[in-house]
Amino acid sequence: MYIVVFIFGSIVGSFLNVCIYRLPKGRSVIVPGSRCPNCTAAIHWYDNIPILSYIFLGGRARCCKAKISFRYFMVEILTASAFFMLFSVFGLTPKFFAYAAMVSGLIVATFVDFEIQEIPDEVSVGGLVIGLILAIVFPSILNETTRLNGFLNSFLGALTGGGMIYAMGVFGEFAFKKEAMGGGDVKLLAMIGAFIGWKLTILTFFLAPVFGSVVGITLKIKHGKDIIPYGPYLSLAAVCSIFFGAKILRILMYGFY
Ligand SMILES: [Zn+2]
Image 1 (tube, rainbow, N blue to C red):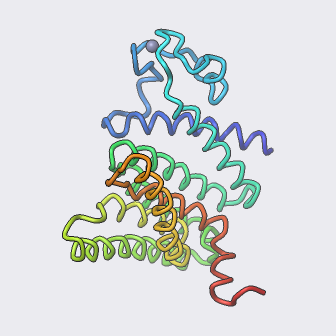
Image 2: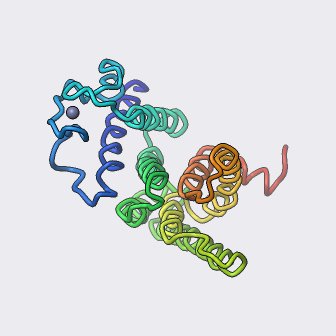
């Protein structure tokens, strides 16, 4: 079963690569089939096997020998590993499928955000709607027992997430006289909130700057970079929250025991 989940994750990762490449260009992620970004030749199915093809081809396209971005390989491994870990913690439950969907969205958001400093609405707004629907259909995702409570927790999560980032942006603009948070970040934490509920969303909000500053400081030392996209850190914090959030909240409320 672990192997099946890993393979399933790598196939989803392969599709996420298509999203990362095509969404910023406003192109369909369904048609046409995979093409070489360099020479536009159609890619054979046997050169399009997640993870393995990259290794067999030695990171170069068969058609024109152009270098294949390492990102393709990374996203496939990352998605497969994430699904594997989610399965090992949550088993085949509604939580697994909901979190797998959320993490997939976060992976796309992260890589697109790094590249163009924007988060596609297909991911944030689309994910928000999916999160709300899943909470009504499977309230157990949010540890609720009724559909109404599932919806309320999810809705409140979206409101808390979007609201906190928005407030942070207003405060930042007031304090530093420049735009601090983009609308994409507001929508992204709203989407995360719809999947994980208001409690873990608050935790995510406070965890993100910790990751952000660690990576930000490293980037600054290396490249002197000033513009740091925030989506990747919200995403990383959200993933931490689904794996360790319950434990962290318990410690915060009752202390170590
Ligand atoms: Zn080619």
